[in-house]
Image (cartoon, rainbow, N blue to C red):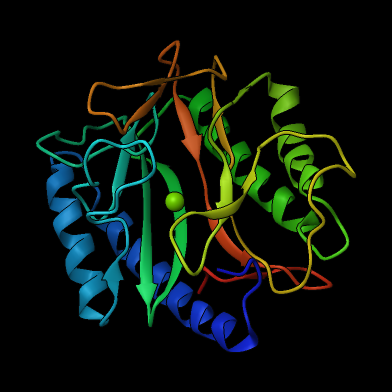
Length: 254
Ligand code: MG
């Protein structure tokens, strides 16, 4: 497994990313108060397979997990940061919902996530979502050949600072493409000009996660879902990008 992807692979990842984006839009539309997370998961699997692709996280067993992930999409609600498992839970008015999934197109994996509100939410929570989305843009801006991993983390972290958001520790972005998780690990904080040098052809999933409170995480009993240790609300955005000499190519986009 090489860190860099070939031009041909990036072309396939871009096509997969377009499909990923289209599925995400349809899932977002389906998320409504009264709908179960299981229903959203069934729809995710159906939409991904309809395009001839695979839901990469279904039955995927990450290192350290005691059983394979049982769904095609992670649905993380409110204080759940990532890896929420779909089930009988009913989505309610006022929830903030994170959708996160991977799609394998012709053997290549894209990863992306978004967070949004169902119905009316507090302006403080709206701001958290808005700033987390700004943070992914800030990370993407500096993710280019010649810069270093620490530049990405630093740019992301800077967005959270004025609002005193918790910048989640212990979870972060990663390489992706040949597999769901590849090297390197991309922290959402860091010092500029430190860490691994970024070079053209690297494909990374950037994924800032901020909370309204603690940066610390706690694993739920199911062995997958992480919540904020103080149960404060959290937001998460993710895109798969390919590093170039200029602005990166956002693969999981229209
Ligand atoms: Mg993801």
